[in-house]
View 1: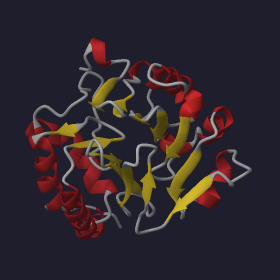
View 2: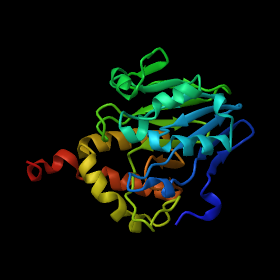
View 3: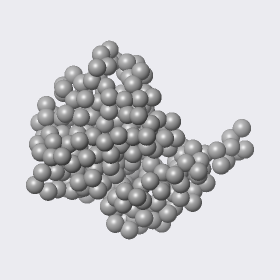
View 4: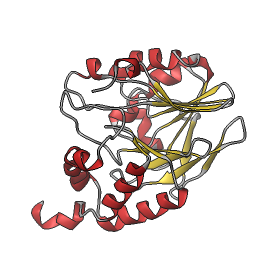
Length: 256
């Protein structure tokens, strides 16, 4: 279970200029919806919001962000992909911030369907990724994660904290009383991640390409949009497990 003192958020990394924050548990707001996790990076007093979620979570996430920074100081919103649990609240966020929105260039023309008429604040991320420079000069790298599961998907690697936001990669599907902030025992965690990854990740060939790219970054934490955060030895254990995972089209004969 999530500890009581972590429910309202936990700082995963902090120095005098920079923070990487998990924005807390949403369990009492979920009511049957997919569990999601939101993250906030604060750099020199300015905010970057990662996958802020759907409309029904908007008020909770605003409250969570406000515990750490004024909402009007959010300059950047990063969407890993187009799913509604990631981005359907976009019109509300653009209404209360002046933030620029980064999303795969594949999905920019779909955002108006979430109520966005003016796309001038949208920045399409090219397929091979790009860097986003923070006020301190630190970089965030948009890490290609295509077909894991979206055909246009990115993770975000924060070079200062060395935390990689992985979006749906690493996601766990917890039971009502199984939710934890950190993966504590990787072998015990596998039943919560195996079914999701076998079905939603496109193929082992793609997964291996992603694992190779992530190993070059050498992150100290993997922070997914669902489930629990991987840190310390569990980062390597997860990458090893993923590299050998048969998934998606590897099982195509069972799907048709």
